[in-house]
Length: 216
Image (tube, rainbow, N blue to C red; front, side, top):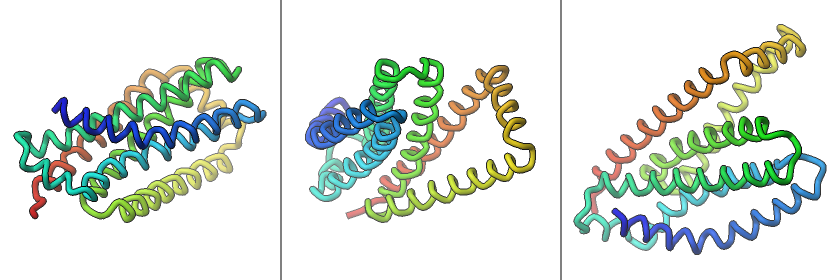
């Protein structure tokens, strides 16, 4: 399995050079602007998602998937390597954005940790959605379906939140959110971790079944 990870790291090195220059450019733009790290956050999420899709689609394009089935590793291990790689990538990007916010912004470490933690969880959910779709369909279809699903869920959450604000008022809603963060933050974090872990496990099992059913 170490050799499979090394292969993906070498491929990621070539892909990462392009994203690194773009990320540095967005970091400079964020630092010079009066806003927060919106560019880096958005680009980090998109870059991780695109890289996940590219690493799988490159294997298919260069017929590595056919060759890998002849190696003395199980198909389950082939899928495990991808999930490990994507978790490492999402963790690295989130940690980098967190460091930039802590050193270049003045919002406080607590706000930065909550913001990046939320972004990290969202990133993992996107990965859990897109990987089985890439194994099932083409990379382009997988991205379109994932973007559509995330857009639909985001729109639904936004509609519910706006309706709730209109119902109880903005001040009451802010007070309730502060109460939740002050008194139930640990429970909220555990719940998010559990939910994301379950989604990743289900995603992994689906991906394994899809790969095991592949024939050439």
